Amino acid sequence: QVQVEETGGGLVQAGGSLRLRCYPSGLTATLSAMGWFRQAPGKEREFVATISLVDGSTNYTDSVKGRFTVSRNNVNNVMTLQMSGLKPLDTAVYYCAGGRTLRIEEYEYWGQGTQVTVSS
Image (tube, rainbow, N blue to C red):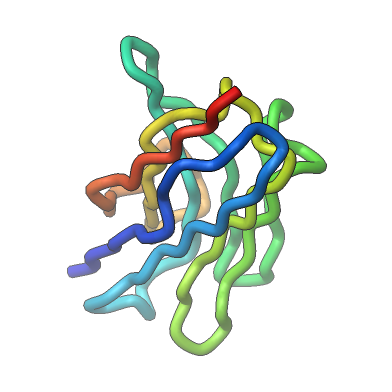
């Protein structure tokens, strides 16, 4: 019922910035929350940030606090991840996800991912 697509990945120097966007389509009114996850080669997928579409509250994993900011457009629910102070360890495929529940464990709609590469 809902599809999401990520854009904005690319190559950036350490210390630089990059902006990712997630475009939901379909029955987007059913979404309660959206979030970002990432997976580096050979590593487990990890949570990055989430935002509630109900009240706008956000949550971040400790490693990106103060460097990444998640936001969304209240009309079309386009979600943005503004990344600054990027580090090589941020290199990963970044995925957009959404769900009808606020529980991150129950997110059910996933994008195909966009590659972020941070060089030293």
